[in-house]
Length: 304
Ligand SMILES: Cc1cc2nc3c(=O)[nH]c(=O)nc-3n(C[C@H](O)[C@H](O)[C@H](O)COP(=O)(O)OP(=O)(O)OC[C@H]3O[C@@H](n4cnc5c(N)ncnc54)[C@H](O)[C@@H]3O)c2cc1C
Image: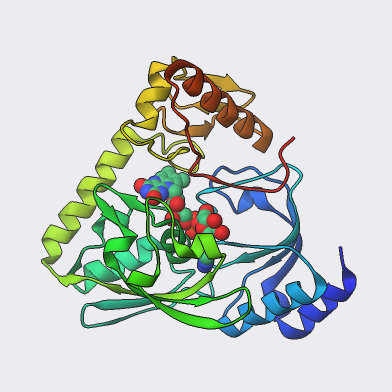
């Protein structure tokens, strides 16, 4: 712990927004992970800029996160600062067919606003348990929809602490990636353009997708959703199933038998159990089908 850095942080950011030695298992949907030395929940872009500037000055590594729904934090934690964009940085407003939201707004809340305003186009995202910032950086998608289709522009903070407004065509959206991930930008806010729709139809679509998720996904266990990206020409879940790995466990981590594309925290798994299982699945699928699986999940900290 760098006490000089902490003192400076406390001078510039409200104390209520700063935690130290924070247990990350409470901040990730896998429900695993050790402690982060510093954990800051900013309430404004100015605070984010301030934190970034101090991290640079004191050479403290930092990591930006949303709801931790696509994140595996090591058991040994993170000897740096977590910038947690969530509550307090989650304002949402709506003008005609455009919803403007801060990075920490949850997709579920944005979907609720879209429904109330009778705006269609965001139904696909209603059941993705992340924040707007996380979803834009990952170009999250489901059931034929992707963030790419609805994002009009994004305000980002660069590593050099410049605020830029990037329009859709500057965001380099690809399958579960974007320029934001590549360039380590921090999403501050975004404009989402939707279309006028019919409220009952929007609600029906959201209900239908929620039912599909409940039927097909092991939502009763902690996970980070689909563990792997879809390899070209294949489905990760099918390859894993065909490799005979349904229900395969390492420690408390298991390949879900309900949906083989999900690695779940079946019972008191450690981050290392999950990590080892991911490696094992990759190796087996490579050995049996010569297909390279690439994790969709992001890793933070040291594994083994
Ligand atoms: C049950 C379940 C179902 C899921 N279903 C889907 C699905 O259908 N489709 C899908 O795409 N994903 C799905 N996911 C994965 C996950 O919800 C998405 O990837 C989501 O977009 C991650 O958002 P987050 O806020 O939790 O990001 P985090 O997990 O906190 O972070 C993910 C990445 O985004 C970056 N990031 C977060 N916030 C910011 C920011 N403000 N600025 C810049 N970078 C940022 C992080 O640095 C990290 O690289 C699912 C997860 C679970 C647990």
